[in-house]
Amino acid sequence: MAAGQMAGAAAEPALRRQPTQRRSREKVERILGCATALIAEGGSDAMRMSELAAQAGISIGALYQYFPDKSAVIRALAERCSADGRHCIEEGLREVHSLAAFREAFGALIDTYYGVFLAEPAMRDIWSGTQADPALRQIELADSRANAALLTEVLAPLRPAADRSLLAAEAFLVFHLGEATMRLAVSVPRAEGDAMVAAYKRMALVQLCG
Amino acid sequence: MAAGQMAGAAAEPALRRQPTQRRSREKVERILGCATALIAEGGSDAMRMSELAAQAGISIGALYQYFPDKSAVIRALAERCSADGRHCIEEGLREVHSLAAFREAFGALIDTYYGVFLAEPAMRDIWSGTQADPALRQIELADSRANAALLTEVLAPLRPAADRSLLAAEAFLVFHLGEATMRLAVSVPRAEGDAMVAAYKRMALVQLCG
DNA sequence: TCCATATCTGAGTAATCCTCACGTTTGATA
DNA sequence: TATCAAACGTGAGGATTACTCAGATATGGA
Image 1: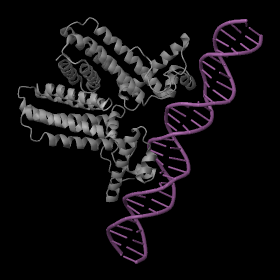
Image 2: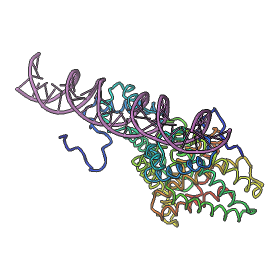
Image 3: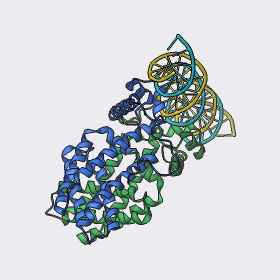
Image 4: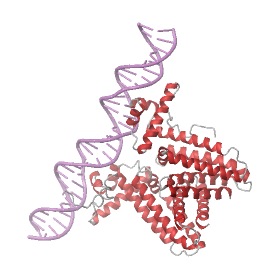
């Protein structure tokens, strides 16, 4: 799916002012960077729009010229994360032409993902608000579906006997459970978290590779 | 000075006023019932404390005599849910003395849980706010751990070769992923959700029973 | 230099959580 | 039954915060 814009009723755009000039684009980047830092500190609920504006070195009014509301800032971060993740998966599955290669590539992807989760508290917080904000939930579901489609595309030729649409649904679930595993793993002692990620890998591979 | 009913120095008690009289206890019940209805309508973020007081037929001040703040209402509902769930699991695993019986009992429990999730939108919403409110997260983690301990207690004798602490960690993960599966399953078309729950059962049983 | 357009500013508005000083009800006891 | 202290209830208002808008400032071309 190449469509970047979300389907559905005419929602407000993610950015109020289209950053045509380079200066504006840099400002948006600075805002998002500050937002990441503030969310990492105390979560997105504790992030104050006034504080964000101050950190970014602009007035509250200017901030609201770029983003229509607070949730749009969160959404922009989520979309950026989502794109990064998909790119990572595309790279990781590029040269996979056997089940053995798939197992190895999948394990490596999970390890990478786990590393990012350990390193980026802001990311954990953003995806946790997924039920409260329907727009954010849409992003997450679309993300999981797209990633599952990538998996399915690689897996289907390797498992010609499997029903393709069932495979897609299972890949969707496996992906979602990967995120849940990460969230849990980073909130228990490190050794236990590592064991959980390992257990998840086993479960996922049994499900995906049979 | 108020009489020293404060047990711990750090955390505020779930109920501000101890309901010594029957009238008060009934009132707490009515408040929680109205809260469930309001959350089912639009989520806990959209629940207004003033609206909750109006629905329960009391003033805003009276509401705050029972609950120290809004999150305490949510927590009270979460704790109630949690206790119900644990009771359900204890019942379901009572007479399990073989792996075959375990498989059947586990499947039945998941089906029950899925049914509750489909029927109770308020429950979905409450558990989704789990990252934003640390106290709620603690309840959820403690709940998962307690339930995993129940599973482990039943499973360990059936799998004497398995390492018990590893089994406990895996049961913890499996439990958590069950919740994640439910959340996902209820937000996709019914047929796909059913397929996901079935896939989860397979994965969980492979992991738990070998 | 002058003007049109783009961008910025920050005090103010509205919505909401929660408090507190004071009024009302209850039930044990005289 | 009458009394009163403690339990319970009330709702206007304080405090916080997302978001707006009328006016100020910066920019770049003629």
